[in-house]
Figure: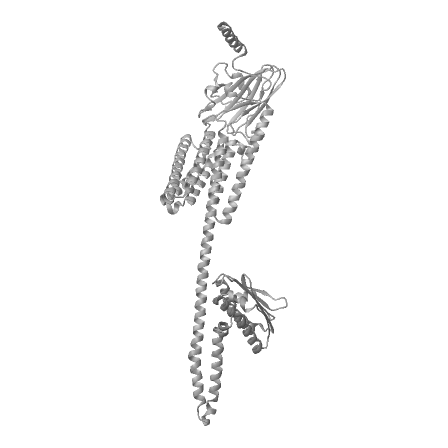
Length: 620
């Protein structure tokens, strides 16, 4: 039995030697393979990249690619990858070679069949003009077809000198690639579309609500979305031309990402008042990012190597300090104010840190992780969802506090209006009482004394008696005007009826009234029906003095609000005259004190109409 097992092992080893242990055997049913397991690597300082270079490549000096795990740090060499491939099927086999390094400076594919001329792709990469980029897909693709039982060598040349790179060549069956690529593109479009909509909504809400926090969140979303464009290759595919100058766009978006993050932390955590030292530190960090590092990133291609190294290390140190400061700010806010939202903000920040770490993995290419892009999107989405829910709750709480403050202010204003109207009412009543009990009585006593003069002197004092009578009548009318006794004794409805009748008799006008039953007005407070009476007085006085009217219509109704309609057929007034007139402006102020409105509109048949309205339950 042992001899049989040993014979089988020797047979397998011999078969591998005959077939070539580095040859990739493809059979029907093949869908996808990672070429790292099969490829060989050759590094050369020769910068030439073309089909002519294939003949100058050595046959020895190749090492297994799997030892490097696909990760290569900054150097000056071109990387050549070769894979021996054989079609074991009896029919032609179409293949698709994919290289996922979207930020490669230069890349070229070559297929050299055992029999036949080599096939080369055009040079591609972000160091070449836009027309040399394969813009049909965010990654680099190279289709080949193996005839039945055909074998050959696949070469891939990578040029990303002085930059770190992770190579991930893969071999696909075209239908399998289309199936996976279709779903991944749909998810990417869905993700980016959702972020775009969210950013637009935040901008609109921020402008409408005048909330700088939402505008900062919109910038945060936008910069994060653009970083996704960079790490997935869609940016170079659709947005900007391929040129070395634009290679630092990922770091430019990273700057805006942290600037908006600092602004959100300052505003949401209330660092301006709660932690002024941290607030000043965050302001300094924003200034450094915008005025030092952003210009440096934009001029990155022309900087010397020393400055590039210094820029990278100092930028990394600043980002570490920013991250530490935000963690301290969140914990400090929670300990100082007990706000659970500070911990949720910290949770969202941790999601963003994980997403940024994975982003750096993609940018630096320091780890071969085919799932890092998907995880970057996942943690970025968790970050945005957490912040969105947090800021939504914050805005709702802010709106409720603002509403409560407005209601408290309205109540305070109504209390002040109540006190003002009550003061006016008491002052008018006091003045009326003093005129009636003081000056009116003294005038009556003076009139009695003059009437008791001898008959020979009575003719001389007769004009004085007439003047006293007119003065007494004027004072009596004045006291009734400022504090009508009928209003106190009979109520609002009877007082308006009496006032309208007196105007009709004395001025010869047609005054029609439509008034409710007296009981309906009992729901008004003394101040409210007193104000209504004064408004009626002022409107009648305005008509008599300025309108030249012959007919007046007046109605009063009570529902949830008290509404007074007043119309005359006079010459009318303009809207500007309503605001400029002293009496009418007093009515508007009185309506505002009662929480109501005073409106003017021209009558259909000519003249003026006014509406005085206020809620009945506003002032008790």
